[in-house]
Image (cartoon, each protein chain N blue to C red):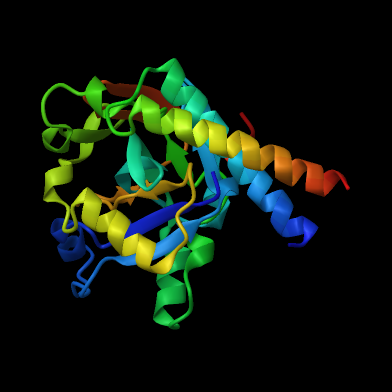
Length: 201
Length: 57
């Protein structure tokens, strides 16, 4: 993987909940490979709560080869919301709120054929401590998958193995140490736990 | 081409080989056909050999 390319503001309901104006096109930003961690069942993932509130953003993630989607996964794009808010208020880039270690949590990928029926209609769900926090389908996104790749290709060189975080639906919110996370979308089903980095794991 | 760029290209080709391995292991040819993967495998291996030899000089 060379990079993780992320789309912001690609779901109308999320734009509304953030009380922000809809941009002409979704926002693009990049997370480095060093922010990536692959989910394994039961894994404990340390996060830096000492730096402020950390919000979950559930997203469908694509793995690309020859600019085609060869794998579908689920991801949590984690955001240091306090840090991001301050930076936004000052008109500064908010990259450091999105690029900390383990801020791009991604499940293993499934092939499109592993999904029953239309994968774009398959609900993707985030549960925190057993409670549904975010739920949507890919068909609700503003840009469809082909439009996303075409749009990204205008601005970034897409390399084989790059990942796309395709944007988050409504329901983003804070996480706490020891939260139990469940990610699901058809054949993708994973549970894991978040722990405070300063307490070790 | 400088060594740094060459090294970057080589690492990208190794990543491409890893993806081809995953596609073959999972028999995942619904998006990219087996013929396309085979063709890419050959061209990637040829270029990888050439670039590695250049880097070794």
